[in-house]
Length: 586
Image (tube, rainbow, N blue to C red):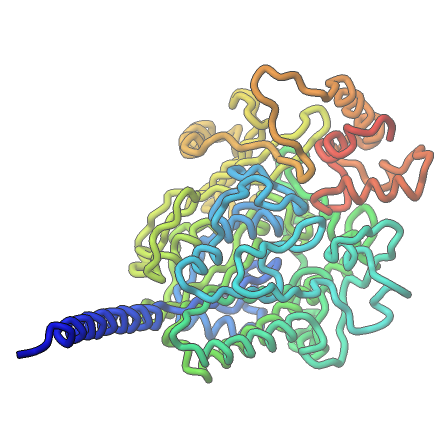
């Protein structure tokens, strides 16, 4: 007969072993589940329009992105949500459009609007992923900063401007644009070179360094197969200045490039709709006003293509390492350009508009075991990438975002889930105050509604473009095709009213019925002051117009830079009134 003491001991031991077996099995299942989760490599490229071979550009030398396209689904009709860096990246990483956040500028951090937002990398981190960011992912600079909550390890910053040659740099210290990207005052600083071709290695410039670090991170990840990774790699070229090693300039001959055939704004477009491309005028050799010479235009176009080819080579290095480490079959690769870029079309340069060349972007999804080497005409906007990646990774759908998953399109590229996408751009024309251009883009048309925030639709001014009949946007057809306008306005009506721009230094809203301490008269005075300074009545203050009759020159120059929140080199009425309303004089 077994003694009761030994029987109790045996039963306890059996229970412990059973529990240990259950825990071990559970851990094994969890590890297996982790191993089954696909890795994510998100490649973000600054200022990249579809000047790529895989998008049909006959001049572009982009063999590595073309190679990625051969194993991907390529979206031919992908659009950003606003053609400027920070709002576009907010849309990618939060799944929220600029008009939802109320952020249209560079300097306002998205958490000022949504402090509890769960970003895409943060969401992946919450579901067991190791998340890391290299280079430009969130917009850092111009008063904005990184989002630590999104990453498992500290972000590795990129030098967006960065020169190799002494003659391109400031005689001492930083250039104007270097300071702004470093969150420092640019007051009184010199302009840097707009282009640079140097006989240096790829690692001399930022994108080469980013590629090196990305390869190292992939090597580290390969040693931890049971921990899926979300690696965001942000290349900074072809953002200004157009710098690249000489060998990438040598891929092209200057006379290969033709100047745009359309050099004027669309006939009938509002005078405030085009961009004044003040960003480009912040660099040496670019006139502060007026058009560019034909030689300078070709030089800039050459520079854009050279910088794109340089970036493409760095993408290739990262993809090669992914293949070498045998991670490709377990990794979703997405390549995304944050917005397009005007290269002289309509007489415009840079982004900062609602037109096709500024808003159309490249988007590629390479998914192991899925469709590859196919193109889709399905409409996609930046906010759709967040929920699409979540579904591909088997994660639950993120809550409270604007985007919608496009996995069905990735499985069947002939399908179409959206009948339109929406993007925006703000303006402050004289006599109108702050207005927003909300643009609906369908397969055939673009309708832009310009009106004040919360204003009645009856006050709106419209642009309409038919890309079947007029792919180069020669003429605003809104007055000629009112029926089409009305049809597209029904699509616009599906969207909530846009929020006005919040301010980085704004205070919480007052409770209903409580009087504001701000004096309306002061704001009105600044509106009148703006009009008196705006000598050419274009709704923008140049640096020269702003500085006219300023009694405190150096201090005034610092205010101009501070007030220029979108850093386009001019002040809109909204920037002038909003930024300086607390001052008694200007």
